[in-house]
Amino acid sequence: MAYVISDDCIACGTCIDECPVGAISEGDKYSINPDMCTECGTCADVCPSEAIHQG
Ligand code: SF4
Image 1 (spheres, protein in one colour):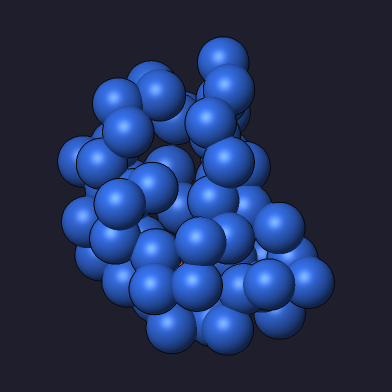
Image 2 (cartoon, rainbow, N blue to C red):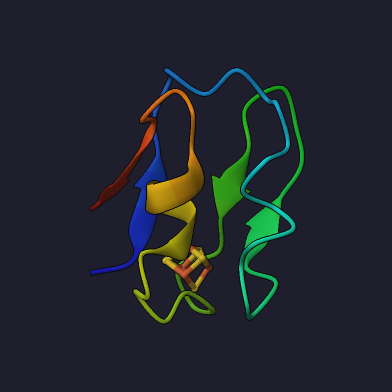
């Protein structure tokens, strides 16, 4: 299952530069394209709000 970003996202932008495949998009809340996500977990590790979890 791809990783997903929850409502705990504060749109800080930390994760977007860390995703090796560019699957994360900006917005009021950031989002992950499930078709691109390789489930590496990098974004979940760097999120300061712990808003990213495997879906
Ligand atoms: Fe990108 Fe990895 Fe996070 Fe998927 S789990 S969105 S590939 S950083």
